[in-house]
Length: 165
Image (cartoon, rainbow, N blue to C red; front, top):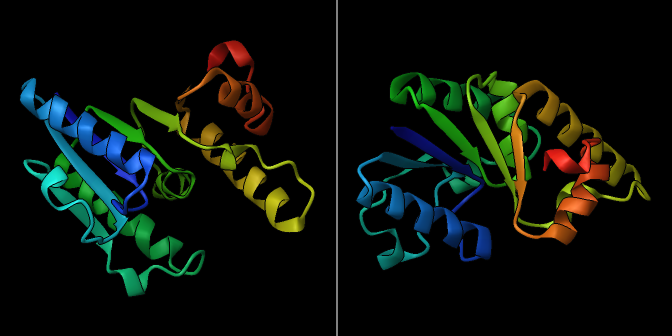
């Protein structure tokens, strides 16, 4: 099985550590697991052992949202070459990029933080919420959350029935 894990970067944080551990477990279980990042990072060192990071942009090239079309094009090209059986998305920006790239097939969007549940109190949060709802619909992604409280908030944030998370 070919699995692509898509995340914003591999800078030290919880979601990124989970992505690396999942990719390593997949590889040790016989899967072709790759990590595609929106921007290149030098973090994690030994934790990345055995896991290939495929960066779409250099750190100085990622300027959200201006670089989104270029990043989406890069993702489309990488996925065309890798031909994954499953794409597992682990960050909201990565989900938007995947939606812009027109990713099809089985997609799993794993929610790690409450940033998908913006309350809509500011213009930026309302826009973020709309973008993430659009990305979920366009990707037809299966959604998973790392906690039940996050799943409760994400149901409203992503306009998705709670039992589907």
